[in-house]
Amino acid sequence: MWADGMVPHLLVCQWQSNERRPGCACVICTLQSVVPRQLTLKHAQTHARARTHARSLAQGGTRTTRPQAGDAGAPRTALHRQGHYRSASWLTASSADPGRTPEKSTRLVLLSHATMRVLSPRAALLSVSYSQLFLILTSGSYLALSSVVALGANIICNKIPGLAPRQRAICQSRPDAIIVIGEGAQMGINECQFQFRFGRWNCSALGERTVFGQELRVGSKEAAFTYAITAAGVAHAVTAACSQGNLSHCGCDREKQGYQNQEEGWKWGGCSADVKYGVEFSRRFVDAREIKKNARRLMNLHNNEAGRKILEERMKLECKCHGVSGSCTTKTCWTTLPKFREIGYVLKERYGAAVQVEAVRATRLRQPSFLRLKQSHGYIKPTDTDLVYLERSPNYCEEDTLTGSTGTRGRLCNHTSPHPDGCNLMCCGRGHDTHQYTRVWQCNCKFQWCCFVKCNTCSEKTEVFTCK
Image 1 (cartoon, rainbow, N blue to C red):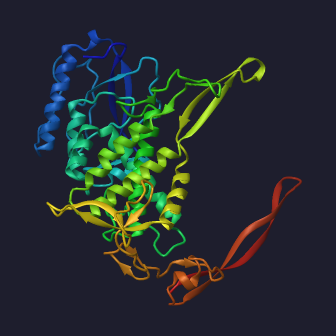
Image 2: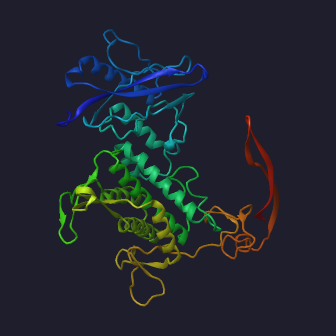
Image 3: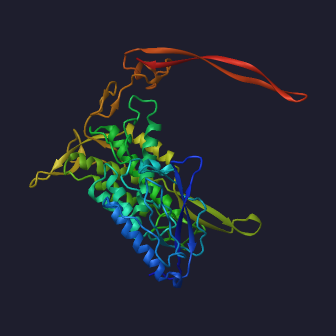
């Protein structure tokens, strides 16, 4: 059943060979609108055969789909390469807003020897090899996915390492959201590496396999920062995707739509970012990893919430004036997301002021109940935006997989700086090596009549210092 006011669409994918690269093929998908009466029995039969074929592939079968009589007019996709791929019919029905033109950016999928690679910034999430071939549909324009895509989502979600059972269930039920979640987690890791780029610990051990993979085992200040920045990154990415219309089941925040602020003379309007939805989705997914009932679980949950709380507090108000000749008779305002770099700076300040805590156990079950400040008189709890840690940080001078330290050997340092990026602190007293390089480039270029450009050759000697 299609919702009222929605026009059904067919996603038609066609296979094209690449003459220059015989081992590769491309799949190009287009979204075509149809009226409900055009969804005839032929389409249903083709869809059923595609679903049966996908199940046989998932079970390791060798079933091959062949054209049937009467299927000439049915939109479908043929994925076939002699000797490697069997022919299959893929048909996906979806619904799109009739007032919105489908995006022109076509997803390009590279097919080669039972390995799928999506050529987009989202490829990091799917950077594993699969035994079978599946077509992944990730565009936010699709509000409904066929059983073929759902089957592919189940297999892909099972291939992502590091997911807890509840996270895997969310991945399978919301395949469009798992891509956005991965982007948000990666955004948090990138920001962590930027904020600590001059320190002994530089977040380099995080996200080496997937964005849902490795974590710091020691409950240190660094672990507190990574949990907070990752939770904030997921909330930020989900909120942005909702505002841009790239996620189903969400959109703009319309709770205050039309309300007026009589004192300041403006009213709510536009598309306010629904940060509440993003925060709640981040809470459901990121916090689902915390299964064990111990003190580390309380620490991680607190830092996750601190990161999301800081994001909510940094939401910005933007306004637009309306009036004759540029006057501001009335103003329409809406809330927008801050730059994620701003969240990173705030969390870096919280990292510097992080507080050490300890767990208070319940008297009956002897399980950690809540956190209190360590070495404090009474039960003083940390604030909502405090970053908390259980153990003191190691020095991160030597490589240690347990603490998540890659060491500082070979790291660049500044031999004149008294700060953490200086060679004295960065190299942990081991000393540093000096490397001299000569950089050559063309300079002082001038146009000569007629007609060429004459340049001089400039050179510069530079020194680079690395830790021993």
